[in-house]
Length: 146
Image (tube, rainbow, N blue to C red; front, top):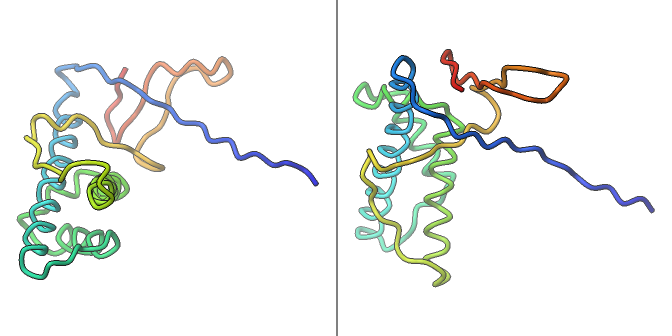
């Protein structure tokens, strides 16, 4: 019997501000914070009305529908779909920890204080040396960051 081990590589980048390209990334982080607050408000309202929690898959469908149909939420499309799903997964995880008494109730966050979002598969590319494995730049969307 052979022992197979799955190995996953992850890259974690700290992106430094640059006045030329900072606006786009900053906007995406703000959109992630707005989606967090919207989903949290929706969860709280639903719980007050019904006493039930909205499951993650239902919340994902709802946010996807808002992004497609409602013109006032059109700017949510600036953030990739997998990044939106990751924000909702974070909120769901926070609620699950609250339900098993391992954490407090999730809070609203100031949009300007929201610090990160995750790009899972698409929307980014590593640039730089391929053979030496020293990547000096990352492309997110059409912008290049150091």
